[in-house]
Image (cartoon, rainbow over all chains, first blue to last red; front, side, top):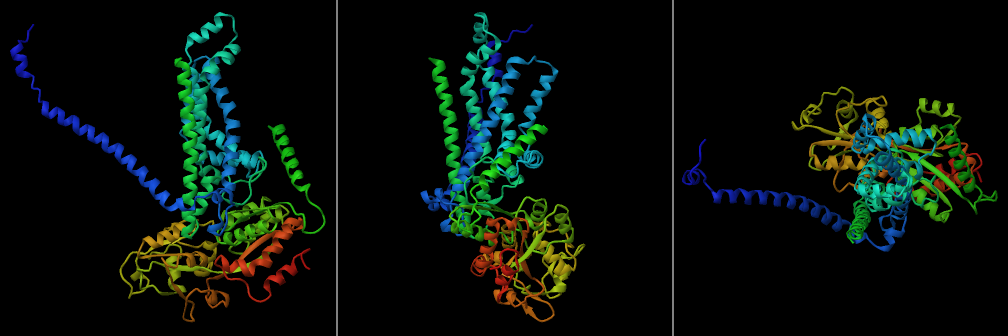
Length: 298
Length: 311
């Protein structure tokens, strides 16, 4: 049993303050460098796109159809196509995704099977999008006979975002306090009533946030849609789910493949529009989350 | 599943029926419906221009879609009954014709323009200004062991040849291999292949000792960054120009551009009107998008030969 004398301890403890502070500073600068690098890349990208594309942005650009003459070209059919696509994708993935999440969280027993399902959903979220394109081509376009339509594209994108929708909805449902459920059961509510009147309303902002973020991913997807055959010149808006379509990322892809430099600038213009749409979607997700927090904290 | 499929089929049918309901039998005045085109990326600019102008002329009443899936990919869809018109940068193959007929589809071939398949080099490459067909063959044939320029001609520098070309789904690839190597599809495969001509332009522009080939329209658009290689077919060096392509002296790389129309579709008034528009406006729109129009009365002759379209 050795009792360290105060004197001896002090002798062994070398503060090396200068060196420790230096290490701390170096770490801080390394972190700063990594954020600076990411931001610099982002700014370079935005500046590059803005320099090329800004002068093409106008109301005409938004309301004209694509054209072989750059001065006449616009993205009306692509914007409308993207809106149709997002609407149908949301309509399909929301009920499926939320239903699956409710089942997994509220109804299923935690056993090996649900564990397996859970793992697979998580894995599906990481499957490359082109694989969903191949699946969509085989099932929706060919087997179900949807053709190369908005419906086939939306069904493919719905499959693509489904895992993320399920996982985020599950997390939102899991965040609902158990006490709420117990209180509902306590006054004699059935499981359905508990879910319908108590769990879902509280979880809904979180579920919607996840949904919007999933759609933000879907709106930028190109590969699966090219796979199902949407790489086309289309100068009319879709009027039914069975119509052929084009979307913003495909219009961008189409223009970058043209030899004339003006089309590359038009593509930059369309990228700006796509970025603005994305920002709006993400912003609405943040607003929704904040409102939910404010309501909960009252 | 079967019930679902049936329901969907009924829905599709109902949707199509709805679109057709606007048709009247009386002439061009009130056309409606949809014309679907797919196929070669080389012919795409022509069909795109036609589709755009036709839709403007029809005030949007008829909708025309133009896809890009390569000549081979286009015929797959065409013979599967998915499209009305197929863009092609070569003639239909026997195997494709067979597939079409198996599915009861009778294609009508229409020559719509000429293209000069252009061999391009980087401007920094100042030696390969003219090459013989045999030299091109030795570079591009299957199993070619040529890796540097001095293996092609002794006087050329000992620099590595970097090759760019279209991918195997492309009609340009089929035509070039047939004209140069003597057999369609016979090509070395250790080159950078892309269906996107723009990728090839960028590739050759960025690589000084490189060589590539694609359609004349793309060369014309990027002639400030690239130089063409004149081709010697035994009668001296001939560079690709609109003149030499039209009179056929740019051989063997001058080639016809086709559209294939499904005979059955031609009975639909909107398809007939579109094909008529195509042939009537080709002399103006074909050169505008960088191709060489047919000479003489070729377009009106073609129009007259079509069932139901003769005046």
